Length: 433
Image 1 (cartoon, rainbow, N blue to C red):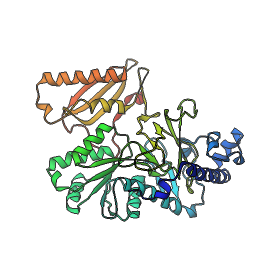
Image 2: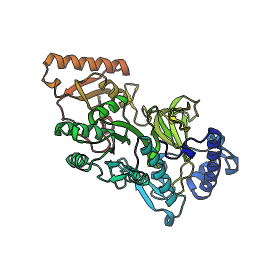
Image 3: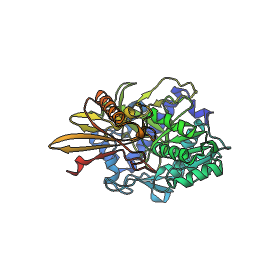
Protein backbone atom coordinates (compact mmCIF):
# COMPACT_ATOMS: atom_id res chain seq x y z
CA UNK A 1 0.00 0.00 0.00
CA UNK A 2 1.20 3.52 -0.85
CA UNK A 3 0.04 6.22 1.56
CA UNK A 4 0.22 9.17 -0.83
CA UNK A 5 0.21 7.95 -4.46
CA UNK A 6 0.19 11.50 -5.85
CA UNK A 7 3.53 12.24 -4.20
CA UNK A 8 5.23 8.85 -3.87
CA UNK A 9 4.57 7.85 -7.50
CA UNK A 10 5.07 11.30 -9.06
CA UNK A 11 6.79 11.18 -12.49
CA UNK A 12 10.45 12.16 -12.32
CA UNK A 13 10.05 15.29 -14.45
CA UNK A 14 7.24 16.60 -12.25
CA UNK A 15 9.24 15.76 -9.13
CA UNK A 16 12.27 17.66 -10.45
CA UNK A 17 10.09 20.70 -11.15
CA UNK A 18 8.71 20.59 -7.59
CA UNK A 19 12.20 20.22 -6.14
CA UNK A 20 13.50 23.14 -8.19
CA UNK A 21 10.69 25.45 -7.10
CA UNK A 22 11.23 24.55 -3.46
CA UNK A 23 15.02 24.88 -3.66
CA UNK A 24 14.78 28.40 -5.12
CA UNK A 25 12.35 29.35 -2.34
CA UNK A 26 14.55 27.85 0.33
CA UNK A 27 17.79 29.45 -0.86
CA UNK A 28 16.21 32.91 -0.98
CA UNK A 29 14.73 32.70 2.52
CA UNK A 30 17.89 31.21 4.03
CA UNK A 31 20.08 33.89 2.42
CA UNK A 32 17.85 36.49 4.02
CA UNK A 33 17.47 34.84 7.43
CA UNK A 34 20.50 32.62 8.23
CA UNK A 35 23.75 34.52 8.72
CA UNK A 36 26.05 31.49 8.44
CA UNK A 37 24.56 30.47 5.10
CA UNK A 38 24.58 34.02 3.72
CA UNK A 39 28.24 34.53 4.66
CA UNK A 40 29.29 31.31 2.92
CA UNK A 41 27.40 32.19 -0.23
CA UNK A 42 29.02 35.62 -0.25
CA UNK A 43 32.50 34.12 0.15
CA UNK A 44 31.81 31.79 -2.77
CA UNK A 45 30.46 34.65 -4.87
CA UNK A 46 27.09 32.94 -5.32
CA UNK A 47 23.88 34.99 -5.34
CA UNK A 48 20.39 33.61 -4.72
CA UNK A 49 19.49 34.60 -8.28
CA UNK A 50 22.15 32.16 -9.55
CA UNK A 51 20.04 29.24 -8.29
CA UNK A 52 17.34 28.56 -10.86
CA UNK A 53 16.79 24.80 -10.51
CA UNK A 54 17.93 21.68 -8.73
CA UNK A 55 20.71 21.42 -11.32
CA UNK A 56 22.39 24.40 -9.61
CA UNK A 57 22.58 22.72 -6.21
CA UNK A 58 26.29 22.01 -6.59
CA UNK A 59 26.98 25.77 -6.60
CA UNK A 60 25.88 26.10 -2.97
CA UNK A 61 28.08 25.72 0.13
CA UNK A 62 28.09 22.67 2.40
CA UNK A 63 26.72 22.61 5.95
CA UNK A 64 28.36 20.72 8.82
CA UNK A 65 27.48 19.40 12.27
CA UNK A 66 30.06 21.81 13.68
CA UNK A 67 27.84 24.67 12.53
CA UNK A 68 25.16 23.63 15.00
CA UNK A 69 27.63 23.85 17.88
CA UNK A 70 29.15 27.12 16.68
CA UNK A 71 25.70 28.75 16.47
CA UNK A 72 24.24 27.00 19.54
CA UNK A 73 21.39 26.99 20.38
CA UNK A 74 19.20 28.92 17.90
CA UNK A 75 21.62 30.71 15.58
CA UNK A 76 20.75 28.62 12.51
CA UNK A 77 16.98 28.86 12.84
CA UNK A 78 15.18 30.53 9.92
CA UNK A 79 12.02 31.38 11.84
CA UNK A 80 11.46 33.54 14.95
CA UNK A 81 11.12 31.49 18.11
CA UNK A 82 7.44 32.35 18.36
CA UNK A 83 6.93 30.12 15.29
CA UNK A 84 8.98 27.21 16.67
CA UNK A 85 6.59 24.65 18.17
CA UNK A 86 9.12 22.00 19.25
CA UNK A 87 12.85 21.61 19.73
CA UNK A 88 14.92 18.45 19.81
CA UNK A 89 18.57 18.02 20.71
CA UNK A 90 21.36 15.49 20.62
CA UNK A 91 22.84 13.89 23.73
CA UNK A 92 25.83 16.22 23.61
CA UNK A 93 28.32 13.48 24.57
CA UNK A 94 31.11 15.03 22.46
CA UNK A 95 30.48 18.69 23.22
CA UNK A 96 27.55 21.08 23.15
CA UNK A 97 24.20 19.63 22.19
CA UNK A 98 23.01 20.21 18.66
CA UNK A 99 19.59 21.86 18.75
CA UNK A 100 16.98 21.73 15.98
CA UNK A 101 13.57 23.36 15.76
CA UNK A 102 10.27 22.65 14.00
CA UNK A 103 7.38 24.85 12.97
CA UNK A 104 3.84 23.51 12.82
CA UNK A 105 4.28 22.76 9.11
CA UNK A 106 7.59 21.00 9.80
CA UNK A 107 5.88 18.72 12.32
CA UNK A 108 3.11 17.93 9.82
CA UNK A 109 5.63 17.05 7.10
CA UNK A 110 7.63 14.94 9.55
CA UNK A 111 4.54 12.98 10.57
CA UNK A 112 3.70 12.49 6.89
CA UNK A 113 7.12 10.96 6.10
CA UNK A 114 6.97 8.61 9.09
CA UNK A 115 3.43 7.64 8.11
CA UNK A 116 4.78 6.73 4.66
CA UNK A 117 7.46 4.57 6.27
CA UNK A 118 5.05 2.76 8.59
CA UNK A 119 2.56 2.22 5.78
CA UNK A 120 5.31 0.78 3.59
CA UNK A 121 6.00 -1.68 6.42
CA UNK A 122 2.35 -2.76 6.40
CA UNK A 123 0.89 -0.59 9.16
CA UNK A 124 -2.66 0.73 9.09
CA UNK A 125 -5.35 1.92 11.49
CA UNK A 126 -5.84 -1.60 12.85
CA UNK A 127 -2.28 -1.96 14.16
CA UNK A 128 -0.97 -1.64 17.71
CA UNK A 129 2.47 -0.02 17.39
CA UNK A 130 4.74 -0.52 20.39
CA UNK A 131 7.05 2.46 20.17
CA UNK A 132 10.26 1.55 22.03
CA UNK A 133 12.30 4.45 20.68
CA UNK A 134 13.25 6.92 23.38
CA UNK A 135 10.96 9.90 23.92
CA UNK A 136 12.24 13.35 24.90
CA UNK A 137 15.05 15.19 23.12
CA UNK A 138 15.79 12.15 20.91
CA UNK A 139 13.77 12.44 17.69
CA UNK A 140 12.91 8.74 17.46
CA UNK A 141 10.09 8.47 20.00
CA UNK A 142 7.97 11.49 19.13
CA UNK A 143 8.75 11.18 15.41
CA UNK A 144 7.37 7.64 15.22
CA UNK A 145 4.50 8.54 17.55
CA UNK A 146 3.19 11.33 15.33
CA UNK A 147 3.50 9.26 12.15
CA UNK A 148 1.65 6.33 13.70
CA UNK A 149 -1.09 8.64 14.94
CA UNK A 150 -1.48 10.13 11.47
CA UNK A 151 -2.40 6.76 9.93
CA UNK A 152 -4.75 5.99 12.81
CA UNK A 153 -2.77 3.20 14.46
CA UNK A 154 -3.02 2.62 18.19
CA UNK A 155 0.25 3.89 19.66
CA UNK A 156 1.74 2.19 22.71
CA UNK A 157 4.23 4.88 23.87
CA UNK A 158 6.37 2.62 26.03
CA UNK A 159 9.69 4.33 25.17
CA UNK A 160 13.06 2.60 25.55
CA UNK A 161 14.19 0.33 28.36
CA UNK A 162 12.57 -1.90 30.98
CA UNK A 163 12.81 -5.02 28.87
CA UNK A 164 10.56 -7.15 31.04
CA UNK A 165 7.80 -4.58 30.74
CA UNK A 166 8.35 -4.49 26.97
CA UNK A 167 7.72 -8.24 26.75
CA UNK A 168 4.72 -8.16 29.06
CA UNK A 169 3.25 -5.33 27.00
CA UNK A 170 3.78 -7.23 23.75
CA UNK A 171 1.85 -10.18 25.11
CA UNK A 172 -0.89 -8.40 27.07
CA UNK A 173 -1.57 -5.46 24.73
CA UNK A 174 -1.39 -7.49 21.51
CA UNK A 175 1.30 -5.35 19.87
CA UNK A 176 1.47 -6.01 16.13
CA UNK A 177 4.48 -3.80 15.32
CA UNK A 178 7.60 -2.77 17.24
CA UNK A 179 9.83 0.25 16.66
CA UNK A 180 13.27 0.69 18.26
CA UNK A 181 16.98 0.51 17.47
CA UNK A 182 18.09 -2.74 15.80
CA UNK A 183 20.51 -3.54 18.61
CA UNK A 184 17.67 -3.29 21.14
CA UNK A 185 15.51 -5.45 18.88
CA UNK A 186 18.21 -8.12 19.10
CA UNK A 187 18.16 -7.80 22.88
CA UNK A 188 14.36 -8.11 22.92
CA UNK A 189 14.58 -11.24 20.74
CA UNK A 190 16.93 -12.80 23.30
CA UNK A 191 14.65 -11.84 26.16
CA UNK A 192 11.55 -13.19 24.40
CA UNK A 193 13.33 -16.51 23.84
CA UNK A 194 14.40 -16.68 27.49
CA UNK A 195 10.87 -15.92 28.65
CA UNK A 196 9.49 -18.62 26.36
CA UNK A 197 6.70 -16.39 25.04
CA UNK A 198 7.51 -16.21 21.33
CA UNK A 199 4.32 -18.12 20.51
CA UNK A 200 2.31 -15.62 22.59
CA UNK A 201 3.31 -12.43 20.80
CA UNK A 202 1.43 -11.12 17.76
CA UNK A 203 4.17 -9.01 16.16
CA UNK A 204 4.15 -9.05 12.37
CA UNK A 205 6.73 -6.37 11.59
CA UNK A 206 9.29 -4.03 13.10
CA UNK A 207 10.70 -0.69 11.96
CA UNK A 208 14.26 -0.12 13.14
CA UNK A 209 16.77 2.69 12.79
CA UNK A 210 19.06 5.24 14.47
CA UNK A 211 22.17 3.07 14.01
CA UNK A 212 23.79 0.99 11.24
CA UNK A 213 22.84 -2.68 10.90
CA UNK A 214 23.64 -5.42 8.44
CA UNK A 215 21.48 -7.80 6.42
CA UNK A 216 22.62 -10.64 8.67
CA UNK A 217 21.42 -8.70 11.70
CA UNK A 218 18.10 -8.18 9.94
CA UNK A 219 17.70 -11.94 9.43
CA UNK A 220 18.61 -12.61 13.08
CA UNK A 221 15.96 -10.13 14.29
CA UNK A 222 13.35 -11.56 11.93
CA UNK A 223 14.02 -15.08 13.09
CA UNK A 224 14.20 -14.14 16.76
CA UNK A 225 10.95 -12.15 16.84
CA UNK A 226 9.11 -13.88 14.01
CA UNK A 227 8.62 -10.64 12.07
CA UNK A 228 9.64 -8.80 8.92
CA UNK A 229 12.22 -6.14 9.81
CA UNK A 230 12.23 -2.79 7.96
CA UNK A 231 14.88 -0.08 7.93
CA UNK A 232 14.06 3.59 8.48
CA UNK A 233 16.61 6.37 8.12
CA UNK A 234 16.82 9.86 9.51
CA UNK A 235 18.95 12.24 11.48
CA UNK A 236 18.03 15.17 13.68
CA UNK A 237 19.84 17.72 11.51
CA UNK A 238 17.60 16.87 8.55
CA UNK A 239 14.37 15.97 10.35
CA UNK A 240 14.49 12.75 12.38
CA UNK A 241 13.22 9.30 11.29
CA UNK A 242 11.36 9.20 7.99
CA UNK A 243 13.87 10.85 5.66
CA UNK A 244 13.91 7.49 3.86
CA UNK A 245 12.39 4.06 4.41
CA UNK A 246 12.12 0.55 3.00
CA UNK A 247 9.15 -0.80 1.11
CA UNK A 248 8.03 -4.43 1.07
CA UNK A 249 10.81 -5.37 -1.38
CA UNK A 250 13.55 -4.17 0.99
CA UNK A 251 15.90 -3.16 -1.85
CA UNK A 252 16.99 0.23 -0.56
CA UNK A 253 15.26 3.04 1.33
CA UNK A 254 13.00 5.40 -0.63
CA UNK A 255 14.00 9.02 0.01
CA UNK A 256 11.11 11.46 0.46
CA UNK A 257 12.33 13.50 -2.49
CA UNK A 258 9.52 16.02 -2.35
CA UNK A 259 11.09 17.22 0.90
CA UNK A 260 14.77 16.22 0.68
CA UNK A 261 17.37 16.15 -2.09
CA UNK A 262 20.24 13.67 -1.80
CA UNK A 263 23.70 13.87 -3.34
CA UNK A 264 26.71 11.56 -3.16
CA UNK A 265 30.07 13.31 -2.90
CA UNK A 266 33.71 12.37 -2.54
CA UNK A 267 34.25 12.79 1.23
CA UNK A 268 37.77 14.13 0.66
CA UNK A 269 37.26 16.56 -2.23
CA UNK A 270 33.56 17.41 -1.94
CA UNK A 271 33.09 16.64 -5.63
CA UNK A 272 29.66 15.36 -6.68
CA UNK A 273 30.06 11.76 -7.85
CA UNK A 274 28.31 10.12 -10.84
CA UNK A 275 25.08 8.14 -10.38
CA UNK A 276 25.67 4.77 -8.75
CA UNK A 277 28.90 5.82 -7.02
CA UNK A 278 29.60 5.14 -3.36
CA UNK A 279 30.53 8.14 -1.27
CA UNK A 280 29.32 10.51 1.44
CA UNK A 281 25.60 11.22 1.60
CA UNK A 282 24.58 14.90 1.51
CA UNK A 283 21.05 16.20 2.11
CA UNK A 284 19.24 19.47 1.38
CA UNK A 285 15.90 20.20 3.02
CA UNK A 286 13.42 21.70 0.56
CA UNK A 287 10.39 22.58 2.70
CA UNK A 288 11.82 22.78 6.22
CA UNK A 289 10.93 26.13 7.82
CA UNK A 290 12.31 26.19 11.35
CA UNK A 291 15.74 24.63 10.83
CA UNK A 292 16.52 24.24 7.12
CA UNK A 293 19.91 23.06 5.88
CA UNK A 294 21.56 23.20 2.47
CA UNK A 295 23.94 20.41 1.42
CA UNK A 296 24.35 18.97 4.91
CA UNK A 297 27.21 16.47 5.09
CA UNK A 298 25.83 13.46 6.95
CA UNK A 299 29.16 11.55 6.99
CA UNK A 300 27.19 8.40 6.10
CA UNK A 301 28.81 6.34 3.34
CA UNK A 302 26.38 4.84 0.84
CA UNK A 303 25.14 4.93 -2.76
CA UNK A 304 21.88 5.88 -4.47
CA UNK A 305 19.75 3.62 -6.67
CA UNK A 306 17.91 5.35 -9.52
CA UNK A 307 16.31 2.22 -11.01
CA UNK A 308 12.49 1.94 -10.81
CA UNK A 309 11.27 -0.05 -7.80
CA UNK A 310 8.74 -2.86 -8.12
CA UNK A 311 6.56 -1.22 -5.48
CA UNK A 312 5.69 1.63 -7.87
CA UNK A 313 7.31 4.43 -5.87
CA UNK A 314 9.33 6.74 -8.10
CA UNK A 315 11.53 8.31 -5.42
CA UNK A 316 15.15 7.19 -5.58
CA UNK A 317 16.47 4.76 -3.01
CA UNK A 318 19.51 5.01 -0.79
CA UNK A 319 21.32 1.78 -0.06
CA UNK A 320 22.02 0.89 3.53
CA UNK A 321 25.02 2.95 4.75
CA UNK A 322 28.16 0.84 5.06
CA UNK A 323 29.64 3.12 7.71
CA UNK A 324 30.43 6.74 8.41
CA UNK A 325 33.38 8.72 7.19
CA UNK A 326 33.87 10.22 10.65
CA UNK A 327 33.31 6.87 12.46
CA UNK A 328 35.76 5.15 10.19
CA UNK A 329 38.68 3.67 12.09
CA UNK A 330 42.16 3.99 10.63
CA UNK A 331 44.12 1.08 12.03
CA UNK A 332 47.72 0.66 10.92
CA UNK A 333 46.93 2.77 7.85
CA UNK A 334 43.87 0.69 6.88
CA UNK A 335 40.34 2.13 6.73
CA UNK A 336 38.07 -0.04 8.87
CA UNK A 337 34.32 0.24 9.33
CA UNK A 338 32.77 -1.59 12.31
CA UNK A 339 30.06 -2.96 9.99
CA UNK A 340 32.74 -4.96 8.14
CA UNK A 341 33.65 -6.78 11.33
CA UNK A 342 29.98 -7.28 12.22
CA UNK A 343 29.37 -8.92 8.86
CA UNK A 344 32.22 -11.37 9.49
CA UNK A 345 30.87 -12.30 12.92
CA UNK A 346 27.32 -12.81 11.67
CA UNK A 347 28.54 -15.13 8.93
CA UNK A 348 30.33 -17.71 11.09
CA UNK A 349 27.18 -19.62 11.98
CA UNK A 350 25.31 -20.15 15.22
CA UNK A 351 28.40 -20.52 17.40
CA UNK A 352 28.43 -16.80 18.21
CA UNK A 353 25.74 -14.20 18.86
CA UNK A 354 25.47 -10.75 17.20
CA UNK A 355 26.72 -9.13 20.43
CA UNK A 356 30.31 -7.91 20.10
CA UNK A 357 32.68 -5.11 21.01
CA UNK A 358 35.64 -3.72 19.11
CA UNK A 359 38.54 -2.36 21.17
CA UNK A 360 41.28 -0.33 19.51
CA UNK A 361 44.40 0.68 21.41
CA UNK A 362 47.97 1.79 20.79
CA UNK A 363 50.83 -0.21 22.30
CA UNK A 364 54.46 0.79 21.67
CA UNK A 365 53.26 3.18 18.94
CA UNK A 366 51.44 0.34 17.14
CA UNK A 367 47.65 0.12 16.78
CA UNK A 368 46.04 -3.01 18.20
CA UNK A 369 42.62 -4.42 17.31
CA UNK A 370 40.74 -6.70 19.70
CA UNK A 371 37.28 -8.10 19.08
CA UNK A 372 35.21 -9.54 21.91
CA UNK A 373 32.29 -11.65 20.73
CA UNK A 374 29.80 -13.67 22.74
CA UNK A 375 29.51 -17.41 22.22
CA UNK A 376 26.09 -18.94 21.95
CA UNK A 377 24.79 -20.87 24.96
CA UNK A 378 25.22 -24.15 23.09
CA UNK A 379 28.74 -23.54 21.85
CA UNK A 380 30.24 -22.45 25.17
CA UNK A 381 29.97 -26.06 26.38
CA UNK A 382 32.07 -27.38 23.49
CA UNK A 383 35.64 -28.55 23.80
CA UNK A 384 38.39 -25.98 24.37
CA UNK A 385 39.90 -27.02 21.05
CA UNK A 386 36.65 -26.13 19.26
CA UNK A 387 36.66 -22.67 20.81
CA UNK A 388 40.28 -22.16 19.75
CA UNK A 389 39.47 -23.26 16.22
CA UNK A 390 36.53 -20.87 16.02
CA UNK A 391 38.67 -17.97 17.23
CA UNK A 392 41.22 -18.79 14.54
CA UNK A 393 38.48 -18.96 11.90
CA UNK A 394 37.22 -15.50 12.85
CA UNK A 395 40.77 -14.11 12.93
CA UNK A 396 41.36 -15.45 9.42
CA UNK A 397 38.09 -14.05 8.09
CA UNK A 398 38.77 -10.61 9.60
CA UNK A 399 42.25 -10.59 8.07
CA UNK A 400 40.81 -11.60 4.71
CA UNK A 401 38.15 -8.87 4.89
CA UNK A 402 40.18 -6.01 6.34
CA UNK A 403 43.72 -6.85 5.33
CA UNK A 404 44.97 -6.55 8.92
CA UNK A 405 45.16 -8.90 11.88
CA UNK A 406 43.02 -8.81 15.01
CA UNK A 407 42.88 -10.66 18.30
CA UNK A 408 39.52 -12.37 18.80
CA UNK A 409 38.23 -13.27 22.23
CA UNK A 410 35.18 -15.51 22.60
CA UNK A 411 33.42 -14.49 25.81
CA UNK A 412 30.54 -15.96 27.78
CA UNK A 413 26.94 -15.32 26.74
CA UNK A 414 25.46 -12.04 28.07
CA UNK A 415 28.83 -10.80 29.30
CA UNK A 416 28.82 -7.80 26.95
CA UNK A 417 26.65 -4.95 28.24
CA UNK A 418 23.34 -4.67 26.39
CA UNK A 419 22.04 -1.38 25.05
CA UNK A 420 18.48 -0.07 25.19
CA UNK A 421 19.36 2.66 22.70
CA UNK A 422 22.23 2.95 20.28
CA UNK A 423 24.75 0.19 20.86
CA UNK A 424 28.31 1.21 21.77
CA UNK A 425 30.22 -1.18 19.56
CA UNK A 426 33.61 0.53 19.47
CA UNK A 427 35.99 1.55 22.24
CA UNK A 428 38.90 3.52 20.79
CA UNK A 429 41.39 3.97 23.61
CA UNK A 430 43.81 5.79 21.34
CA UNK A 431 41.80 8.97 21.91
CA UNK A 432 42.82 8.82 25.57
CA UNK A 433 46.54 9.00 24.89
